[in-house]
Image (spheres, one colour):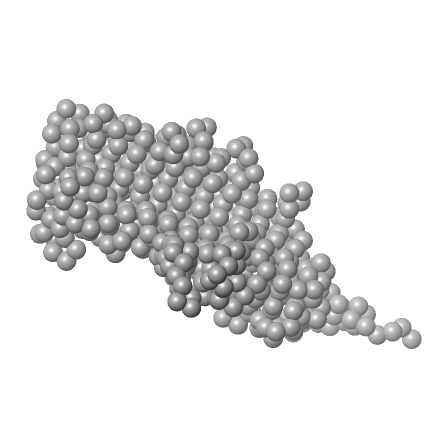
Length: 467
């Protein structure tokens, strides 16, 4: 008599039209980490068991549990990793730093990747217990210099949905990957400022590249919350009566960081509380044809959106920023800055339109060394919240256009107005201001608050508000 096992036991699924299958065939559709010895009690180290499951199949299921891992998990190409729900299924990365889960490598593409329903959580301590010897300066180190919760290298058709990420250097890192959907995910840095780290989280989502000739392509990020538990510019940490200055950055430094992307859309997200920028576009390779729209960009420490090039051969271009709501809460410098970087133009063919922007410390829209920028239909109020009175165009204007910029065209914007009283100028002095030697036009601009003086020379004509 043949030995009975799952391979020679058959069954029929209930319902009309079902076919006979072996139990083994059914069981191997997805493997569970529990099949390979994972416990999920948050105490047992499940690294080896989890890795055995990933080695056995590229379709892996995580039941409810907290799965402690202490080293990088490496998945086969074409990974489908599905958790029960992020509320009940957690991968708990312990103190040692590095990637939590890596798919793909420099020699093997990640293939089609799906990750859903998991909370990636990184617990860390500040020098093993949130304490340090104040007499030994070498005991304070930035231990979190590398690593991502989810690293995808050269993937295609990537879906990351309904996941939560907290801690690690980057939450999601992708390189030279195309056809990506990140939807309904929650990204955070550290939980609170009492668990100190020199700089815990660099990015919520990081799009990188290996060279100037490769790129990420067709990237879609929507319906996500990218928070920072901040914003937090470097602050002081005091232990046993001794204060170390400018050591703590609690939160995510950049919400989304793009060094390479062609055809990307960032829409319908909340992105706020970052230590520097909600969205940083710094092109190392191609960054082109981007849409940033219908987001709430909320109180990062510097500019919500910073656009610049890292080299003269890859200047960001054809980027449309529209229908966003931006709130600076009086401490954020501004909403968007196109910035010259080491002598390289910041960008060209950029549109900033139909945004509602309020309460920034400086100039909400700052154009520095850019070509071909259109600015229209924006509602910009309550800027220069510091109350500067030194007639500085870079802080008292709703939009500042630097001297190296050209073909900048502004039309139909509403400038000025106080935070709670639209009739008050609230230290707003100009609407759009063109610095000497900049080239552009302004038309049909309107004043919301009293006291605006108009712009400087534009095409030889002094602008006044209302026009």
